[in-house]
Image 1 (cartoon, rainbow, N blue to C red):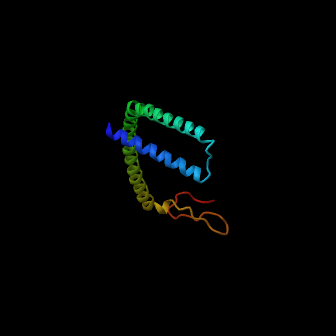
Image 2 (spheres, rainbow, N blue to C red; image 1 turned 60 degrees about the vertical axis):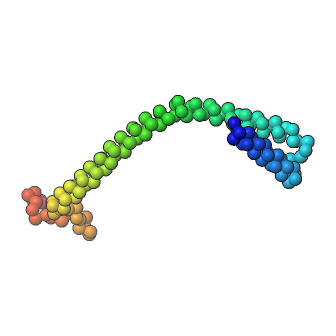
Image 3 (cartoon, one colour; image 1 turned 30 degrees about the vertical axis):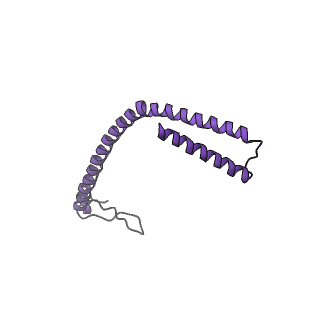
Length: 127
C-alpha cells in the first residue's frame, strides 16, 4: 500500500510540474486549466479502464490463441523447410540429368538462317 501512495504522489507531482511548464511556456492559459484538468482525468480513467479490459482479454483470449497460432506456425515452418530441402535435392538431380543428356537437348540455331543445326545422332532424315 505504501508503494501505491508513493506512486500516486509522484504522478500528482509530475502533473503539477507539467501544468506549470505549460503555463510558463504559454501553451495553455490559466482560464483553460480546469477544462485541461478534466480532460486529463478523463483520459487517465479511460486508460486504466482500457488496461483492465485488455488485461482480461490478453490473459483469457490472446494467450491461448497465440500459443495455438505459434504451434501451427511452427508446424508450417517445419514443412516449409522440408519442402525447400526437397526442391533443392530435386533441382540438383535435374541438373545432373540435364548435363548427362545435354547433347540431345541442344537448342542451338544458325544465326543467319534461324534453322536448327543437324544433330548427328538424330534418326530423322531431313528432306
